[in-house]
Structure formats: C-alpha cells, structure tokens
Image 1 (cartoon, helix red, strand yellow):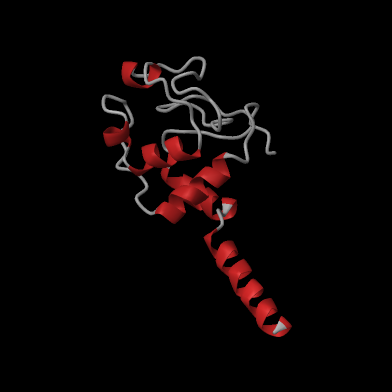
Image 2 (cartoon, helix red, strand yellow):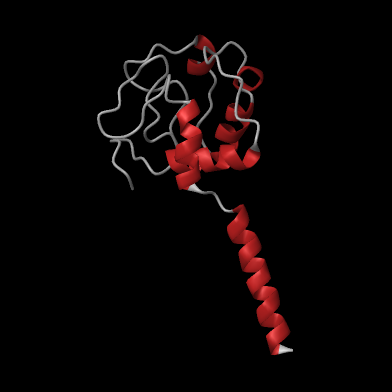
Length: 127
C-alpha cells in the first residue's frame, strides 16, 4: 500500500513539473518579442516598451514610451491572467493598442514567456 502511494505521489509530482512554467524555454519564446521589446539591465524602449518588472505594473506606465490611448486608459495591471490573455491575442484583448503582433497562441509557450519576464525586476536585474 505504501509503495503504491509513493508511486502515485511521484506520478503526480512529475505531472505538475511537466506543466510548470519554464523560464529557460520562455527565453527562447522571447526571441519573437526582441524586435520590439527589451529586457535586462540597460534595456531601452524601442518600438515597444521595456518589459522589465512587468508583473504587477500598471498598463501604459513605462516612462518615456508613447503608448496608445487604449493601453494608457485600459485600467489594467499586468498580473498573470491579464498578461496571458493579452499575449494570446493583443488586438482582441485590448482593441486600439499599437502592438502589431498576432500573439502567442500556445498556452505553454505563453506561460513560459511570462515566467521568463518575471525573472527581471524593474531595474532589469534578474531576481
């Protein structure tokens, strides 16, 4: 009985690990974003705003970036659910925003991307 419980626990643990967010994989997903966004120390606004410290940040609030009215006035804060809904289909989630990107449709890749972005604090240093 104890052996069966250990096997069941191990199987559950493996299942959870397989579904966990993977920041290393998210770094690869971020390659799709690099043309417009930067992260890390010394990151600068470009076509899109710097994504350092995005978790918990108010939408449309990076200093020096010229946001669309849709983004500035959205009232959104970038938490996990908001980011994942936005990155799946930016135009549908926030009509009128300037992001010309079709989105990351694969939920695992989107979650990995978020995990990667969350490794950067507001100052661009890794946590």
